[in-house]
Image (cartoon, rainbow, N blue to C red; front, top):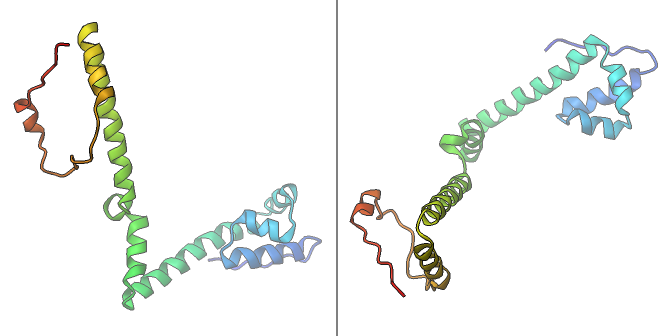
Length: 164
């Protein structure tokens, strides 16, 4: 990263404080809060292209330092560091399983919409009977979700519609 020399004009002390917090890895917003730097003052300081480069460089430097620390920890036998990095860098492949639960929620909602659409296409008397059976159904907890149900079983299923 390019070295930045803080100017000694009236904003020099503020720039030094901002630089200190940014070098620690704080966000621009947090650094401004800690230095009581208002938004318009920050915009004024950022007009200086060298200071703007410095702000951008701090973010990159911090990313590089923390990624290197994670890599060093992982190479030192701390598998949690490697796991953390993989989860965030490649969430589709190594992400936490709560993301997958969300996908199931989407699939269940999609299934519900399809089921309602199919029911709504039936004649009014059949639709009324189906909806009554669904409302009256008492779930006893005996049915559990597992991977044994295969889509090809749908063709073998028979639906018994009671004629009340």
